[in-house]
Image (cartoon, rainbow, N blue to C red; front, side, top):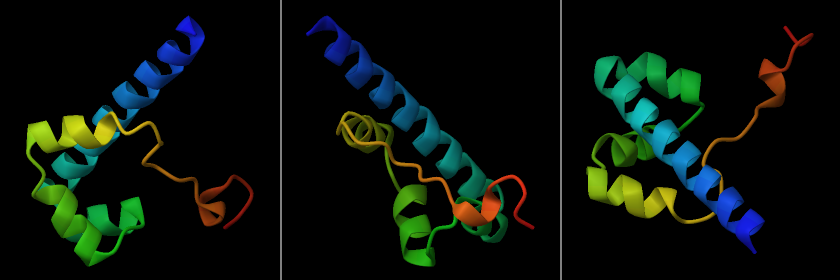
Length: 77
């Protein structure tokens, strides 16, 4: 049971860091961040407008927010 708690805590911490970075990138350069993150303009708007409390709530959801994209895999140009 403790291992599951550790995994859940790690996912929440990762999600919080990812969302904070995504928001920071979007506020710094929205067009570039939207492309780098591989998200729609609608999703970009939602992330950019999140409060810290909302980020914490979303981060604790138990599922990873980021996704790996095949087109960015090594060996694919």
